[in-house]
Structure formats: structure tokens, C-alpha cells
Amino acid sequence: MDAMLGRAMWRHLLALALALRGAQGWSVLILGGTGFRGHLTTELLVREGHNVTVISRGIRYWDNFQRLSPHMTHWRCNRTLAQEHGGGVLPKSSGLVNCTELVNSNATFDAVVDFSTRTLPEMKQAISLLRGRVSLYIFISSHAVYDVAKNRTHDEEYLLESDAVRPGREVSPLDRWALKGKSVRGDNELECEEELLKQYNAGGFPYVTLRLGNVFGPKENSIRYWLLHLWVKACVALTLPLHVDNSLEATPISMTYTPDIAQAVRLAIAKGLNESCCAEKVHGEAFNLACEEMPSQRVLYNYIGEPAGMPYVETIELPHNLSIVLYPDNLQGPISVAKAQEVLRWSPTTLNKALRSVARFYERIMLEAKKHKQEIEYMYRKIKAMLGADGPRFVEWSRARYAERRKTELYDELDDEDEDEIILSRKASADRHGKGSKRPKREL
Ligand SMILES: *[C@@H]1O[C@H](CO)[C@@H](O)[C@H](O)[C@H]1NC(C)=O
Ligand SMILES: *[C@@H]1O[C@H](CO)[C@@H](O)[C@H](O)[C@H]1NC(C)=O
Ligand SMILES: *[C@@H]1O[C@H](CO)[C@@H](O)[C@H](O)[C@H]1NC(C)=O
Ligand SMILES: *[C@@H]1O[C@H](CO)[C@@H](O)[C@H](O)[C@H]1NC(C)=O
Ligand SMILES: *[C@@H]1O[C@H](CO)[C@@H](O)[C@H](O)[C@H]1NC(C)=O
Ligand SMILES: *[C@@H]1O[C@H](CO)[C@@H](O)[C@H](O)[C@H]1NC(C)=O
Ligand SMILES: *[C@@H]1O[C@H](CO)[C@@H](O)[C@H](O)[C@H]1NC(C)=O
Image (cartoon, rainbow, N blue to C red):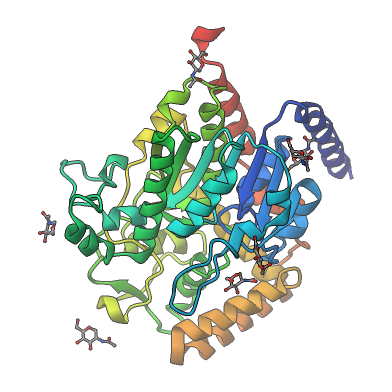
């Protein structure tokens, strides 16, 4: 009872503090802020009392939308460009131009955080609609950009931000064309980055690019971590070893934890708006974001197995085209995060701690079963489709196992605060870090 009262009081005080601070908070527009990668960023900014507007289709991934919608302005728009029959896109009659709230309002934004732009025409459309209305643009890109870049020219073990370069269309169209083919996603993302740079150099708004590695965290909408979590538990019982892609077997993997993205966005906005010195160090710059530990596929499976109570994980090596490998989703290997640590003062969660939090989250979901029944059923359908002939017995085994445990283990109904504790438990220390870095000693 006391604990309950304490919590309620704490929430009340926090809300009060945030309401007071809100007056001088940032006005932030988030494109795609209710999905897997973005919802914790939206949540962090909302909790800090900023005025957050989200443009998304309002699809109900998990309960992100319901949880966030009372605390944000939501403009329900589908920003994906429609295609003509010939394959061309229609930027004059689809996508953000049809987002009437955006087009009809005169609102300006301290920052735009862009989780949803996928292609060059979408980026061009966003730039033309937001020009003159935004002080800083944060683009969420990924390590796939290195898959379409020229060979690196340094001996560093890991990919540096400066490696994402390729010959311009004018200089060497053939080389550029050959590189494009290596990753459609990487090509699209690098084109978006190139477009942001171009408009910036022409006197447009400043921007910061954040490049993510293999993203993991709670509330996935395409099933990756969650499948591995169940698979490491099932592999011995079902003699169903996890797959190791032998073409990437020894490649270290950069993993990016979704709460760490939120932290980086907040730091990048503070710097980019010159609230914490120095804006010129981040304007037009890219930053890699990932945990510092970089396991190979096998080691990652063991890391996932450990908190799941599986000290031994069986694996089998398979050629690339026959293996189900969820990580890595790029080809060029791991990324260095030294620049984000040094310039943004960003500190990623340790991989083991992050994996333990995510493991706890999905364990609770599976044991409790009711609150997220829809997501569990969706995940089982996906797994059946991915595992083919082994799908049905995998799902059956998993259902039976959690049903059995539900009978004997104590578990509570999962409420929102429990979810926060599991995932955002490092918030308090992150806050202190953030405030500290806002006021370097020499300015006092
Ligand atoms: C928050 O931003 C929206 C625009 O997205 C604006 O309409 C609203 O007035 C802002 N609220 C405050 C308190 O500034
Ligand atoms: C969004 O728009 C695109 C392009 O017109 C379309 O393909 C897609 O189905 C739309 N999505 C939703 C959820 O309306
Ligand atoms: C989108 O807006 C354009 C004009 O800006 C209009 O011609 C078109 O019909 C709109 N499309 C939809 C689906 O509303
Ligand atoms: C936007 O600004 C224009 C000119 O500054 C003004 O005429 C118009 O009423 C404004 N619209 C809104 C929705 O504030
Ligand atoms: C880049 O590296 C690959 C493999 O390491 C090699 O096959 C290719 O020729 C290199 N390209 C250039 C332009 O050096
Ligand atoms: C940032 O603020 C510092 C003073 O704190 C100032 O010297 C510098 O010019 C500012 N930079 C930008 C890009 O506004
Ligand atoms: C996988 O690749 C090998 C050669 O690399 C090829 O012989 C085989 O047919 C491919 N299998 C499938 C299912 O694509």
C-alpha cells in the first residue's frame, strides 16, 4: 500500500514538474514516432515536458499509440508516396502534401525527428514542406549506408561515420550504380542523407544523422529478438538448432537498443539547438549508435540464452540463402560509436544489461498472456511462416511451456508502470548525465 502511494505521489510530482518546465520545452515534430524504433523517443520527450507532435498512420502497434496519444498532438497521415503504374511516385498528390494538419498549420518546430522517411522522393517532399519551419532536423538512418559506400581507406576495425561516401552521379555514374545494387535500403538511406546535406549546403536547415545498427528492444513490430528468445529456449528440447549464416559467421554484430536511441535524440537536439555547446560540432554530422559489445552470431545467441535460462544454445551452420538469421541485417560489419560518445556525450547501455531487460519484458508478456494476446498471436503467425515445416511444433511447444509455467509461477498483471520499470529503469541516471553535460564546468 505504501509503495503504491509513493508511486502515485511520485507520478503527481513529476507531472507537476513537467508541466512547469513545459513552458520552455522544445516543440518537436516526430515523423513515425509510435512504431518500434521511435516510440521510446516520443515517450522520453513527452516525459520531459516537450511539446511533441507525431505524424503517423496511427496504426496500433502494441499499445504505443494509446499510451502516448493523451500526451502528444497526433496528426494522422500516411506519408508513404503512392506509385504510378510505371513505378514513378506521386509527390504532388500523395504523402505529406495530403497531411492537411501539417500543410494548413503555420506551426514551427525546434526539431523534427524523422523515423519514417524511406526514399529520396519522400525526403525531398519533407524538406520542401518543412523548409523555413524547422530549426534542426534529426534523420534516423542506419548502418546499411556503409553497404553501398566505397571501400574504406583506414585500418580501423570498425566502420567510421566518414566511411559512408560514394562517387557522385556526375563523377562516376557506373561505380555508383554498381554500389547501389548491394543494398536497396542502404542506397535509399544514403540518398536521403545526401539530400539533407545538399539543402544544408545551400543554406537550408541544419541536420544531424543518427545511424542505427541492428535494432532491438521491447515491442517489436517485425519479429526478430522475440523469435530468438523463444528459439534459444526451444532448440535443445525440439532439436532445432539456431542457424548460423556461414558467410557472416565471424562478423561482429553492432546492436542498437531502442532506449539508447531516445537518449541520443535528446542529446543531439540539445547540441543542435546550441543549448549545450557546440552546435557546429553536430550540424551536418552523422553519428553511429550501438552498444559497445559486438558479439558474433553464436555469442549473441549465448547472450540471449543466458537470461532466458539456457546456458547452452545449439547451432548449425548454413549457407546464406538457406539460413534464418535475424542479425546482422547488414554486410559490412560493426560500427564504431566513439564519435557519439565523445561529441554527444552519449553512453550506450551495456549489451548484456539491455538484453536482460528485453528478455524480462518478453518473458512477462508471455507469462501474463492476456494484455498483449494480439501481439503474441501475431508473433506466432510470423514464426510459423518463417520456420516452415518446423513452425507448428515450435509454436505448440512454446504455448504448452508458458501455459505450464503460468500454473505454478507467481506473476502479476502487467501494468504500464511495470513496463516502464523494466525498460526505462536507467532513465534516472541518464537524466543526471544529460543535465550535467548541458552545463560544462567552464561555463559556470
Ligand atoms: C504544441 O504544438 C502544436 C503544433 O504541433 C501547437 O498547435 C500547440 O499550440 C503547441 N502547444 C504549446 C503549448 O505550445
Ligand atoms: C499509405 O499509402 C501508400 C501509398 O499510397 C499505400 O500503398 C499504403 O497502403 C497506405 N497505407 C495505409 C495504412 O493506408
Ligand atoms: C492529395 O492532395 C492533392 C493536392 O495537394 C490532391 O490533388 C489529391 O487528390 C490528394 N489526394 C488524396 C488521396 O487526398
Ligand atoms: C498562417 O500565416 C498566414 C500569413 O502569415 C495567415 O494569413 C494565416 O491565417 C495563418 N494560418 C494559421 C492557421 O495560423
Ligand atoms: C573493394 O573491396 C572488394 C573486396 O574486398 C574488392 O573486390 C573490390 O575490388 C574493391 N573495390 C575497389 C574499388 O577497390
Ligand atoms: C553556440 O553558442 C555559442 C555561445 O554559447 C556561440 O559562440 C556559437 O556561435 C553558437 N553557435 C551557433 C551555431 O549558434
Ligand atoms: C543457395 O545457393 C547455392 C549456391 O550458392 C545454390 O546452389 C542453391 O541452389 C541455393 N539455394 C536456394 C534455395 O536458393
